[in-house]
Length: 459
Picture 1 (cartoon, rainbow, N blue to C red):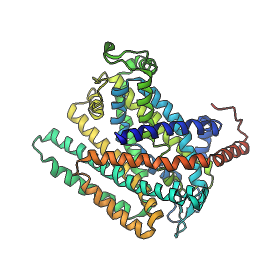
Picture 2 (cartoon, rainbow, N blue to C red; picture 1 turned 120 degrees about the vertical axis):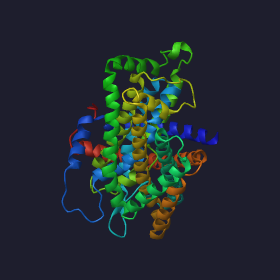
Picture 3 (cartoon, rainbow, N blue to C red; picture 1 turned 60 degrees about the vertical axis):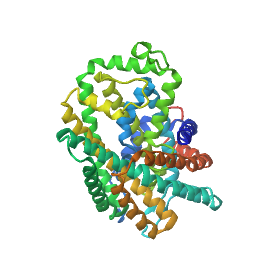
Picture 4 (cartoon, one colour; picture 1 turned 90 degrees about the horizontal axis):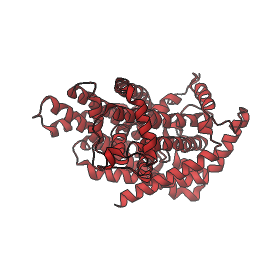
């Protein structure tokens, strides 16, 4: 009960911070033309790259890998079951708000980053607190790093590898019902740990380079499947959008009024699922962006805007449209509804059930593995901040051990603990954002003046 209360409290604090940052930045995340121009400039190839430096695209891939996960599939489907189709609308709202928060986080991480012994830029909330708020705030920085370390081993590792093992076991059972699920899980854990080890030993550069291959591939694979389902039932889209908007404000009674959804329920479920899906305000992704080869904090922060757009506005929306347009049965009002089963049912409308199950297992495995890559980077940064180089080596060993045993554990307690540390990460980050908001406002205003962008020209 305590972890649920904490998660809900943090979710609403994140929403409040997003609204504040949206106006503090003069609605900058909504300036589509300016953001697109900034992103194009950022993607231009730059010469003179130093060893160990990370490109802006690699940083984006690592951050996307950490945020895009099974929540974009199962989380969205179960949100519709719990909050009704209207939850999708409030998920969009949370995405728009989250863009402003992620923009501010990344900007500050770039502004207050430093270089390690090898000259590679590093940063994140702990450095923002230490360098921006002063040494008196060092305990707050250490708390954030500790929560990050624990969250990376929990939600960022054991939960993810357990999800991979479950998906692989289910796919194996669809072909051979008598297969030993525990044996499959053990083999999956060992293979996952081996794959992670080959990446982690190469440092942050190799983690981000691997993400640059895995994330675009998995995203294209899943997006292609959702578009296939949506195209198959495209004639239903007008009704789907009507249902989303009418249900968002409690005007639509689902299932003949048996499970009608109020405005408060749709808003609560949609907003909270949205903010935890894109992880805006948690403080994790800025650790990847701060290592990027970029000298303009505002332009790099635009990557944060784009990340939230891809995560929430694009992938979550496609999942929602696939589920609602397919006509698959949705157990509205059931808090224990399996989002993965709903998504599988939607995919099975265009492919045989076995094939759909294997495809979904592959997607889940790729999404979870990319999350592990992203969170391994965050854990390394936290360990380095707390314990130095020796801490990094110890963390990598612990991460690989957790990757093996996480596949075999009963995951519910680990999931609850990981979510708690995720929520706790947000608290020091929110204090930092509120304290350093004037810096965000100043840098944004300076960028607007330098590029002569009218402040009122939001869209």
